[in-house]
Length: 250
Image (tube, rainbow, N blue to C red; front, side, top):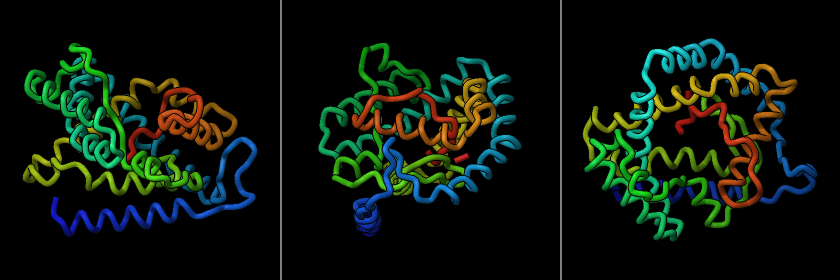
């Protein structure tokens, strides 16, 4: 990774860390939800719902219907494998050498013996999954969660997670090793994986987005419960992200 880019990323992270660490008094509700931008968030939510209804949902259902399960699994495995170098970078930044080793082991085994990661051979070898992101790195560094936000195209996040999503666009070393267009294969596979998830879990996602009395509040609660559970902060809620098309977008 070029030194100039690394310095820029560290500057962005520092600014994000400072922003997340800013104090907010008398705004966190008793249920642990901090949503001072709710009015604007709901407008973005309506935009995301319209996009899902008009484009993402029908595309995802068609995608999942046409492709055999084994192909969908292969796309998901490949996307996960391509993302492992980024997991390694964030694990190192967090000082988590065990997860760094797991990510490297899975990357090596699945790339060599799993046809570039299309097959998940590492799981068959009982090597645990390894996943993290820069939002978790900020959490480890002491950044506060910050307010809840819903991002256009990307869906639910917190201020800390939103900064993490942006930085993660630049932390995967593969983007600097492979030349165009090969460095975009991972992005394409990730979009395919998220379309597959949206199609496969269509009934559950639809019940949240289109059948609940307040889909915004429901989605916010599910996201915050899941994210905090991932970080070890509290017990988790239903394990589903209706707006899985994050970057990590539609």
